[in-house]
Image 1 (cartoon, rainbow, N blue to C red):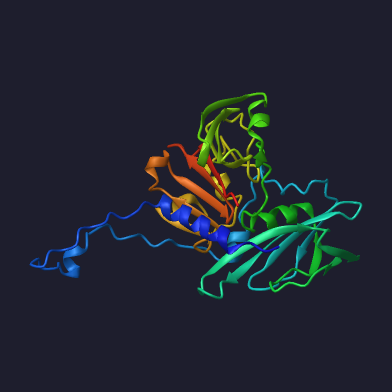
Image 2: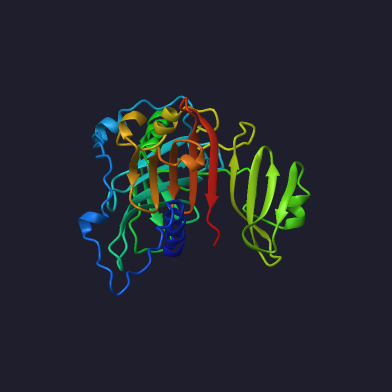
Length: 326
């Protein structure tokens, strides 16, 4: 159930790189007079404060008809939501008729060495805990101890309540990817529909392919298996959606499928963090990503980043996805 600090730092570097690197200014000569702080300030427009809504208002937003529950690998017959745990902890558990289950959880975590506080999460199955039911209550007994908070007691809820509860939880370890995460190069290139574009023996995103209307990249490591690093697509035929939204969805439906402390995209201003901290689980809005081709709704779970890019009509016309490689 633990997330590695290295993965979070890798994501941090990626996000910082995406923001651009400040230019390095030459050092002043011995005879130059340093500019005053006032002289170094470039006037700009005063940012308009974003009016946020309360958690109660956020939860009362309508759930899109396209909203889906995460894939548990089985057909769930019962739905369970955890009592509060840790710092703001939430957990949703889906259970099959034969007792199998999968649980998604999140909570706020403060890194001891830095004091950073971020929203983190993950998922686990019955391999890590035994579930005991008593009417409308469920308890988990874990096979091993842990030094992080974990959900223990749950209450039965309906499927509609589960959809709403999951909508109000962050994007978190929930994807069914249409490409393999790790595969031999020969096997991948023999896959029907795969067209090689370029290949470099060693390097991040060294192997590039066209597949089902997407540009798919893999990391290459000196002839080792290919490790999936990401894709970009503008094709509705590429089978990738998150919570039921994808190419062709409205930006408002994307917003309504994730936690948000604003009601509409118009309320979010130019840049806004809907939920989460600086890294880990987070959702953001950015109207200043012109080089990406439109306004961007970004969600991340600390290991992956999904960007929904909107056209002028506010419709998702492009998706960019990045996957961390351990």
